[in-house]
Image (cartoon, rainbow, N blue to C red):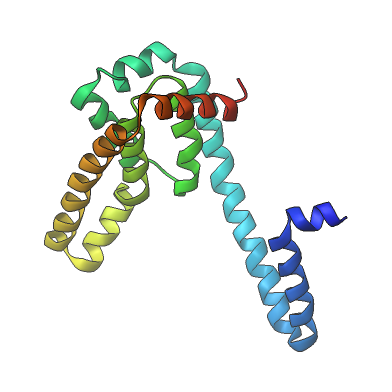
Length: 180
């Protein structure tokens, strides 16, 4: 029991707080439970399809294809593919990390994977469209083009900062996470 509590501290603290809130304001605790159930439902609608697609990518796309499109010698083509994969993605940023692990495991260049994660997190088309409708086209373009340049420069610099040994270590960790 103690091991469960230590492993799930946030869950245990949340449950205790919910019990305390129930004694203070019963309707608030019901509202909190309804909102929690709603969030769980939303996650169940989004996450499984994303992980199915990630699994299909892992099985159907051979390593040679990833190496040729996003590997060490991919150049601008690899960066462009990383951009399109990130920009046309769906789902929360956390779902991009398993895909990034698979990309690294299959031989994608580290800067392309970093760029993909950056674009997924900030430059997805729904986010860009939302920005345009709220702050206008001109300001959105300034922001997004600036981010794009910073992401390209940042991902290339980050790859240069890491030593070969560190990049090999990252690949080994990707292999471990993938269960190989």
